[in-house]
Image (cartoon, rainbow, N blue to C red; front, side, top):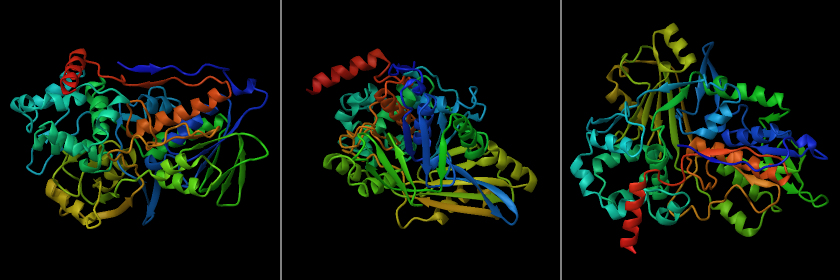
Length: 505
């Protein structure tokens, strides 16, 4: 069951105001595009500034040339889960049926001992989905369920947002799972895979974030862990169609440009001057800062007129996760036909997952047909400085032996370190959408959000929320948001959790 968070009421269109507001959105990732869409649809004049030459941010796509051929490239696999309601609402602007997405029916997880988990044919109704997954797991037995510490595990069984952060944000996910006697093999295979989707090891991830993920994907929603992926590279499937849609709503894009500073206009209350590295100045009635963490910190540091000291310190206190690597290879021979589109790994460091791109991506499928090969992508999260691409490639050869003799026709390795880190104890000081500066709002997956959302959905939700804050400021109607329930759906689990809390106190 979804929960709808009603939109602020107001005028249907900014054209009914004495003057249409002008907004600059800094960053054209998911958060910035959601914010731009939310305001442009209500008649606000929107300009988007993006330092890259493509849209989508960390989910952007582009093409690279090699020996006269064109290769679709992006920064790696992303799962579009069915409970990403606000992200899907954004994509539905260009296709209400979301035909640009195709389902991945199952994605096995395999550990260093060769044990495999599967998400195929799980019940959708909580808590039976989680219980059935545990009982059919090769690493989790009924006796393990009986050994769980009910008192320590109570927050996991009945998550409430934002209350879970008061209860668990002070400890890390690894310690929490040990405290509740979660079996080590299941911990490494299942929960570690999810925690590393935040680009961090469990020892560096807030237990509250882990519990919120468990709520989103298991006990808080009926969509479960089935997800979709785009049918072609992100640029052609998602962002170029959305760009055309936004152009029709008057949005202007400045690509390949960076914002250097933002100055409040002292002669005009609640106005801003946005400066770019090309020397351009854009005047705005409001600004949405939807840059990545490093970009946000750089802009705030170079804009001394923005915010008070406490807010500026909170921005500068944000941290990024360790580096991650994406290794994409176009091989001269195919992987075997039974390889899944996506497989997660544990105990195969530094490798975290393998994608076989021709299973779902149109450009890779065409290349594979034309060349008799395969397009394979490797992810390695939370890298240590000593880890490198060859280690992930060696693990690919171990898991998919047929690739050991394959030669890459073309390959690209990307190493980036721009994902937010949700470290233990960081939630209370994490800046939110509202900044305290009239007309200035934040958006992005690293921004505090007191709704159950994660990853791309957190980015989209903060973007819509940022648009709503500004629209409400001008008396214009906002957009409803959706989420999984903010508290556990299963009444007996809520009762048990409350009982254990009372015993603990």
